[in-house]
Length: 91
Image 1 (tube, rainbow, N blue to C red):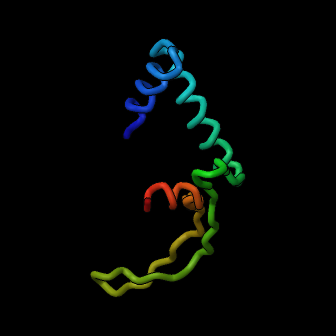
Image 2 (image 1 turned 90 degrees about the vertical axis):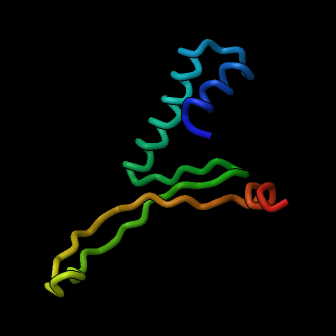
């Protein structure tokens, strides 16, 4: 399922127009993105949670040349599956 499929499902199941369904889906994903950008955790009970991990800077190596390279600190989003979703997928 992709974003367009989700919009179409919302359109048919909730009886919304395509524009209204698109606005709802875009609002949902925009707010999730904003929360993660602010370092907040996003939790959807029974489904999943998203959170941001902070990684420190470190010295790495270029695999081709063997030269040492400084890797900057970074933040990456992570997904954690909820118990109910695990059970539903592995029925």
